Length: 335
Image 1 (cartoon, rainbow, N blue to C red):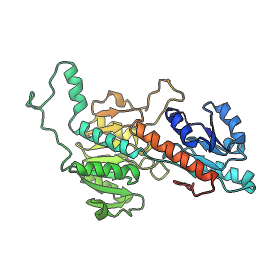
Image 2: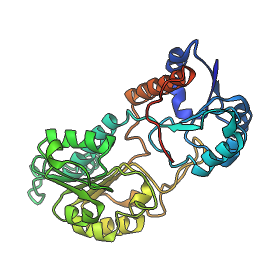
Image 3: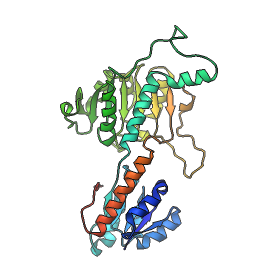
Image 4: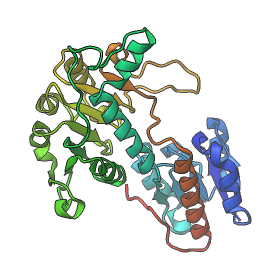
């Protein structure tokens, strides 16, 4: 029977479902403490977790699959995969890496909530009414009529699972869209987009748009790609929604333009600092975004929904069973 070591605490909520799907096919070992993980890896066939280091590779001679419990593989060290092959490659098949998704629907919902909330200043209206002030153009003629999404143009920086799901939602509400990707290979007409291009046209896209939705993976190529020039192109009415990784957006440039009124608003769900343990108090950035009234701050929850994790449990179980039956895996990743 396949031995599966799970180090991803986020999957504990669907642990019963994962156990049900793997009953009779695999033994599940939950190892959430670092010392427990290293010991459990000694006899593991599969690691289900967000991270894989060289030390973990050296401790896992029988490992055949590193299954990430989400989409991001930035904590899987390519050197660890190479090291495992050097040490144990002669014992059987090469170590495989796979990921899973199912977060795109929840993240598309978040993107619509953020875009509507920022463009119509709903958080400010909520705060004001709690203090007894009716912050509405109906009761305050000095306030302008807020724009809806119909007729807005959205730049989708990244057009994978999340970008496409979000675009379908924006499109249904009457927005138009531009897709910007590393390769520039998106067929605009096929997806109902105004146009699509490579990342060298990001500034141009932002200059004619209202909303920038960021959903690209973090890499050396994308780190800081949303900086001063991009934010300047968006202008004082533009908004940024970051669902990718914090460092894709330059924190200092974003804070400065938001605080100076050179950018309309931002919804930030991904950050520059994270707690090292549950319950730890941790400021998510050196910049004081919490002091700005035109920012929506959430603790990396845009993809957190029951359906997300049930779907992921299904993919993980599929790959574990496929490995045991020597069938091809789904969502394999080359690092």
